[in-house]
Length: 109
Length: 230
Image (cartoon, rainbow over the protein chains, first blue to last red):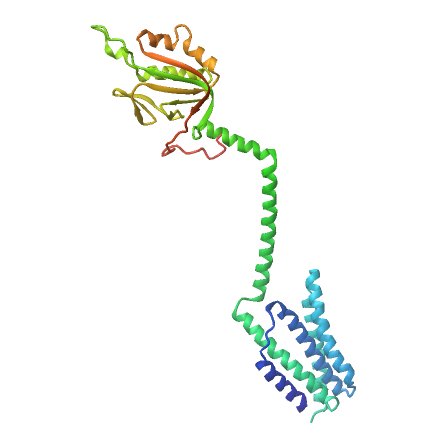
């Protein structure tokens, strides 16, 4: 568990000092991609806890989820459908679900 | 202590990416909050584009209306009103009258006033001209408008608050023959005036120019009636 935490801290530090700014118009897509990434991480943690972890599935899932979420929101905006909230709801629910399962594993231990 | 043993490295890498994204997003959100809310920008830009679209359609409509005859009639009406108000110089067929005091010496015992031009004489002439269909009248470069006065001011004549002494030149636009007949009829204005020796000369002309009213309109007490007024 220590390794993912270290990775997270390194990422946060790198992001804080990296001179990259997302244009305001794209902040929405970025937030959805972020939520998708969060979902993937929790999914990975859950899989790890369940001893069903697959490296390829996890890594590809992470990137495709994030990109697809942002892409879908973009398409939705073009079509006039607020897919933003749909994506938010779906990923949010999954995050909490995964969190609940992980919590149970911790408690069982 | 920890149940997760599989895929620690992969999760760590992904977590690093996640952390990176988190930090960037955090900074961006902070930046947005410190400037203008995103929703507001979206709202305003949408409204701007909508207003621009509206403006474009209105401009197009304006161009269309300018080319339709409907507006031409409105323009013609305003031109008519301006002509009637006397604020534009006009020209056309008409008469030029010159009226001068009598050269005859007054006989002893006669009132010398009778041999001079008075406001009444000019008013009679003007009245006759209007009745004969005059479209525009001026006296010595003063266009007669709705509020023009013709009044004796001592030995001079006051028109549009400007004083003139004889001879007076009256310019009229209208059908020349009708105007002439109206003045020259038997027992008419000219005959009466000539009885006293007042000189009236009359010239029919193809082009008579009547100047525009040069003053301003002032309405201190009059106000248009609000509801329709028609």
